[in-house]
Length: 389
Image (cartoon, rainbow, N blue to C red; front, side, top):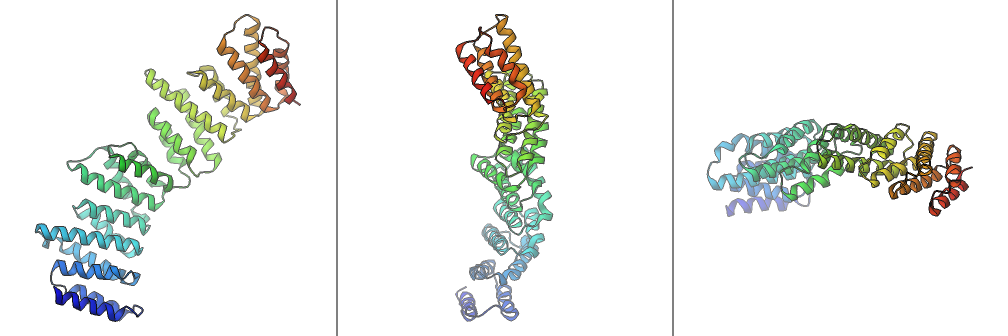
């Protein structure tokens, strides 16, 4: 072993000052081939990787192929351990060198080896070299792992971790869904946290998978998808599209019980906050906001609906606010009053002022001349009138 290592070091010392040539690459290839034991091969690989030069990548790829062909030859416990470590080193180096030609060999490691850490390293390297031909296969693998662990829970989690990092590095929208599901799957917190971090980097515009999740998933997952929508790098119009869909779906869904009704309300609230934050003026948002106001589970939801109408400031939104104000004013004249109505009236008036739309003028005049309102609401109406041209 000492004689072998001396030979390796001598070759490396001679070649270090020189640029790598095809002849020198052949020398290193021969060093690996001449190694008698698996440990000697491993030492040669470590020395080659230690050079930090991408020109040795073809040799490392050949070494990986050689190991895959001979894996049945290494059956002892010690050899299996060295073999797995060696595969990990080779996979990591090939990924770091972004050696595209090794993609099929890396995938062979994923398919053929039992060692989960070696498989995970191969998956991560597929992501590093951006081998997009394997995106679908890695996504399907993670999707299946997300469902439930097999007999070896730890091994499945280690492979899932590799899938998550690979899909992040692919930066392909096809990886979004399985990584999303990994954020609340059976994995330990470490893996779920990594899935959450990776999700933000997978695609600049993940709106399509987010909208699919909003359409078909539980209220809890709709809410989670909507949170990722708000923080994504998608264009604002696309974010608005997803928020409107969430509001529509959550309004039309029939809750089975009180917990689900509350969860759907949270989806509607976040959708309304998103529309407010993105200053949506989309026409389809008006009837959805009116529905949320009329059927909101609590005052917070109803107030958010009024605010979204004020921010919209379109004629349709101003008309909706006018009708709400006139209805509340009629109730007040009829003696139908309570704290909730007063709170909604003030919010509707203040959001009406934000529109600066003349459509609201008659409604605000009606309120300001109705002495049954409190002084605070009368003042709000008079202040709002000053904002109307």
